[in-house]
Length: 195
Image (spheres, rainbow, N blue to C red):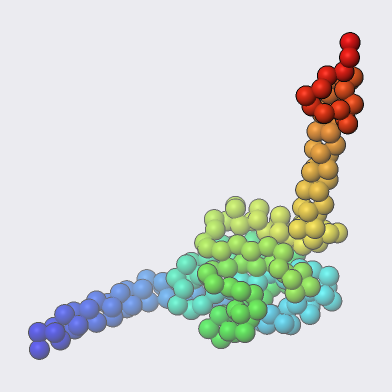
């Protein structure tokens, strides 16, 4: 009997929190208008190929309060909705209902925004992001997705180019620093040439 009392208090507390959240509008937020076309992940990828646009994926779940915050604030702002509609094919992925998409996208933390090109991941951002930062990230991710070469390939090319330039500069510097010696490379180190 003594054990039931603490359990009852905890249950009353939980129910109270849920009721307060619902009354304060902190429950499940409506799906933002930008997702009105109702693309699934697969149909968005196919539409992206047709329109030659990257796919914008918002991964969420009804129980995720930070996800609800993103839907009510950033994703419902006119400038963000306009940018998404203009630059991307939007896909709303509820991880509870679309477990295969969650697996495919390797989403382990939500809310998550992913940008895909031809079904391949180009950019990923997780967590609640302020409007200005989110907008800048969207611009950069879009530019990345529509660039001629994938980011990693360009980064790899740039890395190799810089590495080769450093190696050449180092080789030139070492050749300029070596004084011309009368000792031939085949002369043993303890023998000195005659004077």
